Image 1 (tube, rainbow, N blue to C red):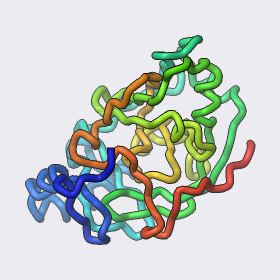
Image 2: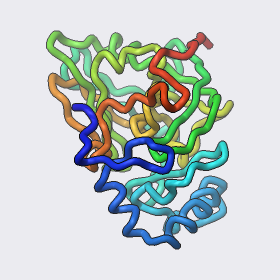
Image 3: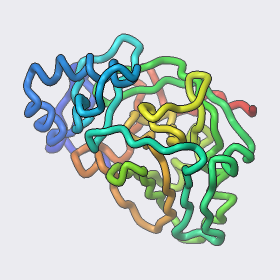
Length: 249
């Protein structure tokens, strides 16, 4: 499914933004936009209550100056200890599995440094990530013939995403357990999240807890709101879809 002109408008920087998502943003009002950015910064620092977060995850169309914006679609930031976290891997696989955090970190680690680009315009450059290749997890489970897509779920109970099998097997698509040189915080989607380097940030699902291999596309949360399923950042934003350099541990 490609971008559809009747469902998209352009953000301030010319990037496509789903029409229904924009209408939701406008419903917040001007004060909500201005307050939202400041509140999200405070929440990320642990200085503001979660109730202050914009539950639409769209409180700021204005790009940040090298800073992350903290988005949630449920109105709070779910939290789970590493010891309690589990990743369910199932669907069209030979060996369904449930991995612990220790299981994940015992697999061959990879590191990469790449930008995080939001569809609303802001970008954080040269973010260091560490985790395991999503393709290694798929090989561990044994993908069955006829499988074409992945459905990814979050332990917030709402957020979902999708990837094609080809996208999922790129070397710059990882299941990450470290970023910025340390553990991934709950605000950034920890203890484990997806990172899809060549795509807009909404594809890098936070609070990852499930990977289901399927034979069909199931659009994710934001795609149902008008965002593109194939969310390549693109050359017009100073990026292309070529993999960044990926290293071992």
